[in-house]
Image (tube, rainbow, N blue to C red):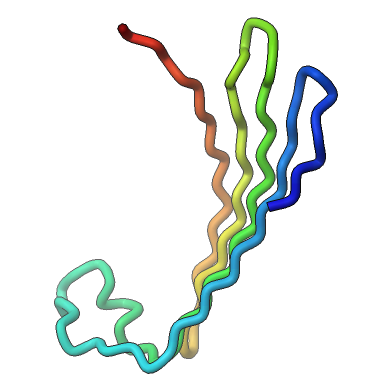
Length: 93
């Protein structure tokens, strides 16, 4: 995680992740389940990049917006996703 620092109002961070799996035991995967599409693979790789900005003061304090690019590669195919994730805490009690 790299922190770009704060200007008193916004804080921006960058995160990178790399996950590698191999010799995967697919014996117990439900052939009709959601994961069955990936089960034929003997190795899988996931790469993620997160860029997040957090509002530190003002009316929108603690609001954050994160842009995430994720790529999940497996033998012979891959899936890419681009997500925009917004978080805002609410105090109910």
